[in-house]
Amino acid sequence: MDKQLNITPKADWLLKHKRPIIISGPCSAETEDQVMNTALKLAKLGKVDYLRAGIWKPRTRPNAFEGVGIEALPWLVNAGKETNIPVTTEVANAAHVEAALKAGIDMLWIGARTTVNPFSVQEIADAIKGVDIPVMVKNPLNPDLQLWIGAMERINQAGITKLGAIHRGFSSFEKTVYRNIPQWNFPIELKRMFPDLPIICDPSHIGGNRDLIGMISQKALDLDFDGLMIESHPTPDAAWSDAKQQVTPLALKEIINDLIVRNISTEDKNFIDHLSELRDRIDDLDEEIIQKLANRMKIAIEIGSYKKNNDVTILQVNRWNEIVKQRKQLANAMGLSDRFISKFLKIIHEESIQNQTKVMNS
Ligand code: PEP
Ligand code: MN
Image (tube, rainbow, N blue to C red; front, side):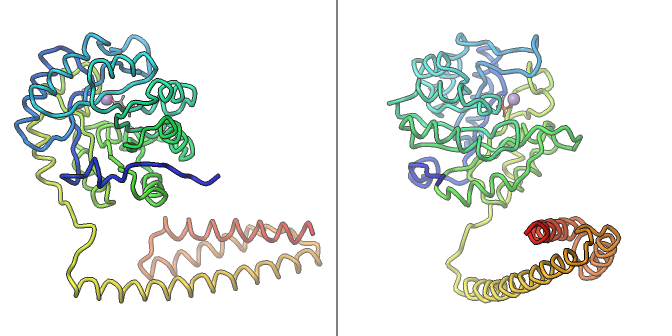
């Protein structure tokens, strides 16, 4: 199925005045005072475009703090009015949408635990129908691009054209330095498919640790993300949820000041000329690589029929191990990493085996 989103181009709304945009505020609204205090401190920085706070918190385990609920909505709305900054919160069902719209929330987002469930997303889409409000959709917990796109399509089909995606990383059984592994190829692919769709990075939930936020944010900007959502709290260590990953407004200021925002392009003629020369060389090399891969595959197919005629198995483990060892040495000597060459050989080998299997069964 062709993926189509009928959206308002990001340059016409979210990025009208600034790139990257910054969304910040506490993981959870805890008290009226905490929300207002955070908002006032963030407003003083002059860098925050949206105030965030979780009103309803979908928690992994029961008995954790599950948010104050509807009572906290006016706290966030008032903090927005006081600071003149639009506000955003997470909605997970129709009742949340209704309450948030009634309270005057300016933008909604759908959390990772909701994006995984098409029934919930559809319920939200139905509740939003006919309302002109921006909606950001976080990636689902599991690394499934179709599920992420599907959730955005549901919201889009309800008539929402100010749509955005938030990349917050993916759950993983594997223990890594991250709370949620970034798998940057997902947002990169989304960008390729939908160039007009804004993509915001949430380094707080990717990192799970405040020390990683600067590094992840810079990486996101270097990949041309459109903004950052960073959790902040006046006293992060005392936060009722996600304490380790929240930063003070002052720390947020330092993180933002340290970021290098590179240009997407430039008018400089020398730069453009030189870049286009380099790109021509890349184009030539890609052509050569594809030609060579096709030749290689032809020979693999020939080997397949030779094996078939001589009743020999497709997989020859010793030969394969030898290839991997030899090619790695060669690649390393030429400055290519083990990780890269291993992946590259693996997909070539898989394709060869598949082609040889076809020959064998023909
Ligand atoms: C949050 O933003 O506080 C949150 C719960 O995020 P996620 O849905 O990414 O886990
Ligand atoms: Mn959080």
